[in-house]
Image (cartoon, rainbow, N blue to C red; front, side, top):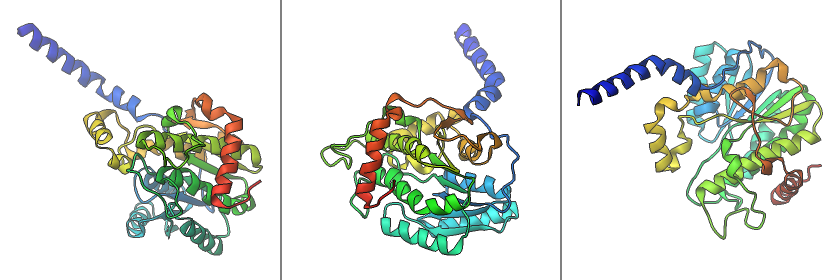
Amino acid sequence: MIILIGGVGASIIIFCVLKPYIRKYAAGGVCKSNARLDGRTVVITGANTGIGKETARDLASRGARVVIACRDVARGEATAAEIRSETGNQQVVVKDLDLANTRSIKSFVEGFLKDEKQLHILINNAGVMMCPYSKTADGFEMQFGVNHLGHFLLTHLLMERLKQSAPSRIIIVSSLAHNMGRIKFDDLQSERSYDSGLAYCQSKLANVMFTRELAKRLQGVTVNSVHPGSVRSELVRHSTMMALVFRLFSFFIKTPREGAQTSVYCAVAEELESVTGKHFSDCSPAFVAPQGRNEEVAKRLWDVSCDLLGIQWE
């Protein structure tokens, strides 16, 4: 019994000694760039909370004009007021955007192009994860519709403004989950069968493939995808199991600020000015699953996405 207590005590002492090092490792990479963004305009989707909010806070502190594009405008206004107060940057504005509705996306872009003459950084950050089966206003499975198709259309409609403002950057928030994703062309909307986890993985794989295919078609605009890590946010609200795991292992889960670091890095790092079509995690290049590198599937996904959205994008 004495030996047992001694062993437990020793373990506790060792953990306490190693605790700051473990936490630092769990926090992941940090963006070390001091780049300023004065005079530059940024759009961040879903920036009223979580990773998007912390990304907006960081870029606003660098002097950028930040447009918070979100569905919950009241919450977005509260976030904008908080960031303006904290950073002293009054150029933080909120615009209504519902990525689950193509009409809302088109309305957002129409208003943005009318009000804003430049767009230097677009961060496709918003997303839904493992939600019960539902469809967007246009009949797309919610995760595929919001995470991929909504951002696909938004990027398409903002592309000319991005080109006019070049050099400019696009950052697409994906996930390590893309490793488990497959593009089910015979059932993209999961109408035959639905698994919330696999549907999420499919949407995150689509993010990576969109990034790589778009990069091949652009000049003057770079596009990279990021894996933010496991982050303490509202994204897991639809999964009781994930929420429980995150709570039990909270010490090893990133804060939203820590999770935002790679998005910030890809948006501001001087050494990435001409880097495009890559995937990043912890502010470093990251592995892309073999299916994410399949150029034939990526091209097919591009064409199918255009057909579903009723657009032409060569």
